[in-house]
Length: 285
Image (cartoon, rainbow, N blue to C red):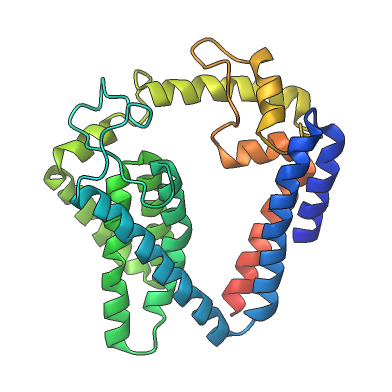
């Protein structure tokens, strides 16, 4: 699956309108491919995999501690480019830690929190499981402070999946506890949750209009793709931009839509195949 995905990335150069930028991104991709190969080759045993997860756990905590420190020491201020201040009054500055943007930090936590949770609950002693699980409160707190709505939903879904495979009986209790906790949430979180799907919110409105334009692009380029990188997207998107969206954009702001648009059907399907095969291999370990 990974080899086919890598091949689709190379073939995408044939369809790119900005081949130099696509080649630049392809080099970055192949760095990731090499890392995946070395990881699979060197961490093919359970103890080796736990060592890798331990390093990921520590890195997650360090980045999230930096994010919490931003709020604790007032190192950041409200940024209108991150939050629509018209309908998010009372929402404090969004933390980003070492990752430049709250959305980037949210994505980082989404990727590594489930892996860190698996590391914590698979420890060989009960006191280790308790201590490591308690440490996960740090990235959870940092996730709250990002005020990334999609991140909150993603972490919630990941938690449900983890509980489903470990202890299905607990799910109804967790759902009930979540509902009962809603009135206890801080007002800033309730305000942020209330803007989910609100077309008045500039971020939501931009995304909806952007996706309409991208869907039109997929009709023309969905089979072969437009090639890797932001330059080719920026070049083609203005011809498809819809009313209410910025005419200048560098990506679709949705991973799977971006994969299909940049790499076409082959790249999209090979990526999904790679993810499914990786899940099967991990479950065997």
